[in-house]
Image 1: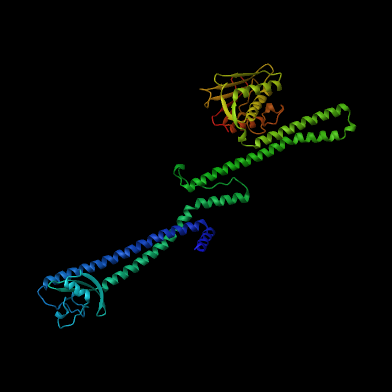
Image 2: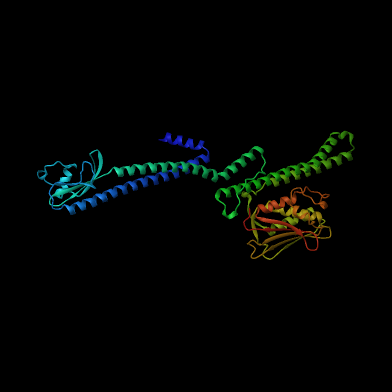
Length: 471
């Protein structure tokens, strides 16, 4: 038995889903069709026999009423030819009281019992004169039994005709079930077939721009397979964006690394011929090489940080944002001694905490402060404000960083958080164009949202709105 089950499971695995679905649907409909035809056959057979039994009962009643005073005899019809409506005979309980003429219908012990009143009336099937008969044996009174017989061949013929007709209908139903099962499987699995074809095409071409065609209709009334195809299209869209972003990142990184690597090679080759250089030239080349190494190292570290899409959960802890901001602003004052950094902590914000990785949140604020310091004039401060709404523990914690520099042009606003994007005014300034992209990634990883806008009165305004969930 287990071997049969294994063979069945192997057969199902080797057959396509469409074939299995078609067979299952066809088998279900075929079973219903065969069951209905079988039930109809038994109902028709029962009704035909029931009608014959009713006719026998009516004939017996009529014979009893017409011949109650007669003795044992053949009462009606030329039974040998069954030309009468019914062939009837009366049989006494005592065989000694039988008439001299032979009985035309079979007389058995149960017939004598019915005559004696010890057995209930019954129907039986007999064959006489080469014809099938349906016979009723019922009490006649005065210790006698009445046997009434009718030809059963019309009923049997009707039953055979019904069987042939219902068999034909059942066969047609099975064939129709097969066709319907194939049509249902083909129609129902069409989106799955398109999904499979698209997936195979993407695997072959490695091009995620392909999409599955969806049937027309409102989104709220789509079936499960159509919703699956729509979800697959959404996944392909996300994959396409991810691949495009990866390609842009590689292209931008290679472009940004080309210049410092070229300078590194030039200075390294120059230092390789140090015997031909003066001490001042060697010192300048060595200093330039060190700066370029630090620049490339910082760029590679930033790329590694951007490649990581989530925060390390074991390092997550409850961070007091006000203390973090104070520490980061103090570090910025050390790095940018010629600028003023002003920090304002609003009511309730000093006690506000958020789950996060302290080093990553510090990196977020440091990047915003460094960006503001690049564009701020020496006589204008960089303003940092932390504001809490409500009791400071809900979703209303906001951190802003504002500078008083030239601000962000309207055409640059949509791209300031893109990797390696540098506005026209910032291309002469140091940096790789990754700081703001990294800041937004850190913010989103901590359940916050970082936005940029033009500050009232000039300058740029960056706003971080912290959510309540954290990483």
